[in-house]
Image (cartoon, rainbow, N blue to C red; front, side):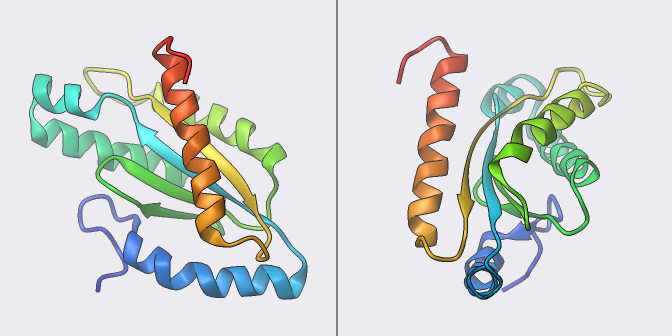
Length: 155
């Protein structure tokens, strides 16, 4: 399996599934924490329907490039699904998430696209002791709460 997604150059979900267990073991051994962030590009279906799939692909490429330019070199970006990405902020804490995502939001505004790219997110701190599935579930729950909140729906 390839380590990189051919469209976005983010690491693949398959690679995440392999990598995360060694990272969790490292966190446990070194008593460190990282933060797992799930990011979902808002309105990709609308972008595809309005501007075409090539523009949708460009939006995903630009999103990942901007994300990589916003984070530290030690942080990792994985393509988790069609328009969902996992960001692992290594040796970090929940307190850092909002400032990073605010910088990302500002950086996305500078893109030369015929629409504004936005995203929803959820996150959870990981320490190597809590199973990764539980951390992913908590981050995913927060992602959906944020998506519903954006739409004006209580979820």
